[in-house]
Image (cartoon, rainbow, N blue to C red):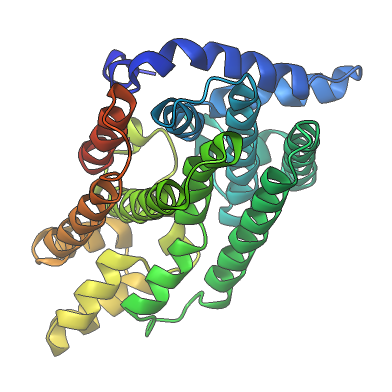
Length: 324
């Protein structure tokens, strides 16, 4: 993590190494081959946003039980497993500026390791003897899988609507960030208004995060992002910038974009970038993401004033300004 990210997380930044230790202990194996595979996903730990959300939520509610570290580790392991599986689905070549796991050990090894990480997350969560936490985790993983299935079902659907796109991302990124924010309420038996607020916060933050991510996937820097760009496009999956462009473009402009999406010309991604940059599609996406961020921050109003609540608010601005 960068120094700016450490500052953004406030006091919980110092607690993240403990979360990493729990993840490492949970993924430990007596088998040398499995240990080697696990070591290859250590680079997946980037911004540690999801465990930070768990810890910040707990701090904002005044919860100081050690269980918060375990739930933060659960959130991180679910995220890591989803990244490994996503790279298989997207046929990605790189992650964090390194070869993706599916490229180094094959799809079979990557899928099974993702399953290993996910089952470890469930094992750790069940050890807390909190039916509410297990139920929340189970429901979230089911919703995320639904979102992935919907995304696959809509591949090469060039008529995908904005509403359908938003429905898909609400079941993926937004679902997990919502759960990260809600984990703290499970630990603290929080009043319903706090739970509702944190749930809305996590959902809206996740929506903004994914819209920003989809913009960067088309017009960002591969070096800064540290992963293969244009992966959704390569699989025939439309994201909001393209949906907006196709909705607003005139006949010739729409035909030109459709041709590029179908990869009918050399350097299709570069051509798509130029078309998007010459349109208002990216501004529209940025404004929509900003609106979700504003709603996320507004959802925190009922929480007691604290440094942790301030950090949660600041995360919204980070989501909009990030470049990786």
